[in-house]
Image (cartoon, rainbow over the protein chains, first blue to last red):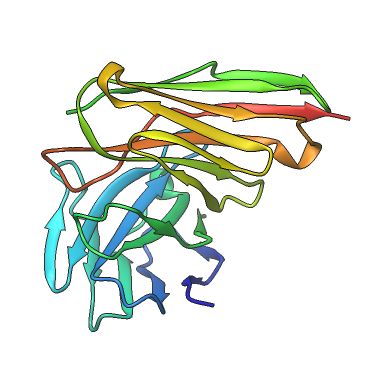
Length: 113
Length: 109
């Protein structure tokens, strides 16, 4: 089945230690998104790629970076995680901007010690 | 940016009861999706419904785009329906989904 896969499902890191979260998709969608969801809050968009074009949200901290080496994979890099970065990180894809319909992966829950 | 309001914020039901969740949005939209977030945190797509009515089993949804609201109906609720239900919209001028704050549904046996 076509799907969005996130690894790992649970990630523990130390304060200030860089961490990378991974997302892959078999849908061959052009757009990939990263959302951050803190406890009891709605998901918040961090950035997205349309093909190779990177689009950063205005209020996304500089501590967060992303890479998309090919259509299937997208990575979220947190350069120096703080305690406030502990959250669920959700990856999503859509065929293109016009279609709008987004498919979400299962998420990676990040703990910062 | 577009504002999305969901009501009620919390809802507690007995198994077998019916419920209606509401989503109001402040501007025209290209896309409206309803999601169920399960206890493990995954967002499950329920409906893609920028306008009209759709049904899937015990769930149905209606969006009245001209009046800027959408309703999600859950009939004969089951304990497995528990979780958070999110409405998310994409405004006509943008390419991102804006989420409401969600409705926390608890279905008791």
